[in-house]
Amino acid sequence: MHVVASKPLFLSKELISTEVLESEREILRSQAEASGKPKMAIEKMVEGRLRKYFEEVVFMEQKYVVDDCKSVKTVLDELSKEVGSPVKIGNYVRVEVGEGIERQEESEPVAQAA
Image (cartoon, rainbow, N blue to C red):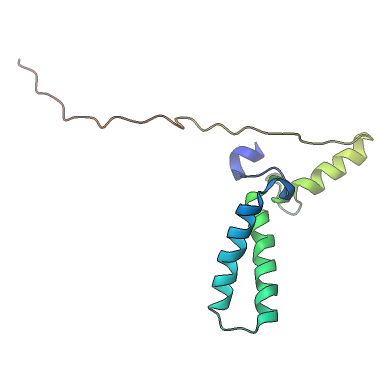
């Protein structure tokens, strides 16, 4: 349910490729530098925005859809304590209906002879 609603791109932060991470960091740095703030402030802005990015695209960092006061990681940690055994998510698959299907443009209806 959560994966369908939140559309995460990555399971955990550790699974984000270096290229994607550096690209996002560079975009955020450029945006922060445009604000004209001091270098120290820019670095803090980049790190803060990067945390926000993780909350949007990383499954374990996202707010849990059933209780948005908790992250998915927090919910799994609580469940692990409750059942007395580690609860982990190894992988997920999200399938969208119609994904990958090219739709043909419908031609205008042909008038039928009466």
